[in-house]
Image (cartoon, rainbow, N blue to C red; front, side, top):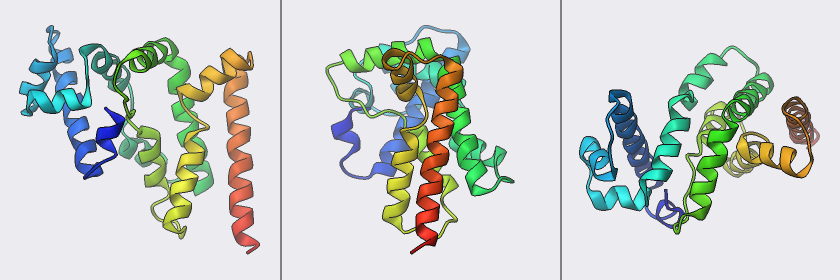
Length: 198
C-alpha cells in the first residue's frame, strides 16, 4: 500500500481496507479465475479509486496475495504460542517468520522487486509488527517502549534480514536462522535485564 497514504488519517481503518482487498483477491484466486484490480474492488465492495490508492498495479497485489495465502494471521500465531513465556513466544514468532521467509524466498524476492520498481511507495503488510504488538499486549511496558521493541525485533525476522544474511554476509539458511535467534536473545536479555536494574 502506498506509504504516504497509509501514514495519514485513520491507520487502523486503512489496514482493515487493505485486509479486505487481500481477502477479496484471495477469494478470486481460490475460484481459479483471471481478474484485474477492478474485479478485486467490485468483489470487496470498494471503489476503483480506493484500490489504486493501496495497489498501483495487479502485479504487486498478486505477489502479496501469493505470499499472504500461506501465512498465518497474527492472531492465529499468538493463539499457537499462548502457553509460552513471553521470551519463548517472541522467539517463536521470530522462528515462524524466518521459516516462512526461507520457505518462500523466491516469492518474497519477486514481490520486493515489484514493489521497489513501482512508482509508488508501498507500506508492506506489517504482519510481524502486528504479531509482536499482540505478544506485548499484557506487558507492563510503556507505550513508547513497546513501539521501539516491536520495531527492533521486527528487524530480526522476515525476508529483509534473510537477503542481507545471504547476499551480503554469504550465510546459508541454517546460519541465518541461528544468527537471528542469537541476535533476538541478546536484544531480549539486554532489554529486560536493563529494566530490572533500573
